[in-house]
Length: 156
Figure 1 (tube, rainbow, N blue to C red):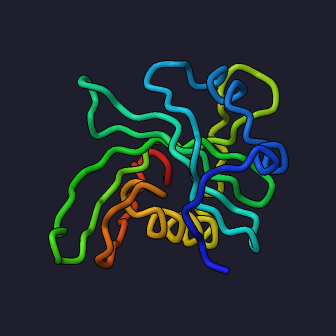
Figure 2 (cartoon, helix red, strand yellow):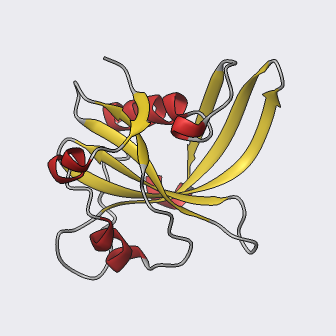
């Protein structure tokens, strides 16, 4: 089953360890938005959900949680460009600035996401493509493609 956009059920919050207080403790409350919907692949046990959005100071900033192989990863993104829409396929290009595992304990996410793992990157790409621009609230029906670019410091 591919990724689908849906509202998060209370039992799924527990099953997938989506505990927002833990995330806020590690990433700070600024710009936090409650995770009410996600892009999920139940067969492969993965989800992507947006938890932060930049305000006036950083309107192109967003942060996500990506649950992959039993680990929760915190991902900071910046929208670099957006083209298409209005009947034309849309492409959004994102810069990934931070990929870190959200620890069960400790003060901050650890920079140890498997960003060099090709399957991790492919699964993350699939999730962003299925999410389109707004997950369950997406009105876009045309083809959508997300381009993910790693900040050079993540691949050095």
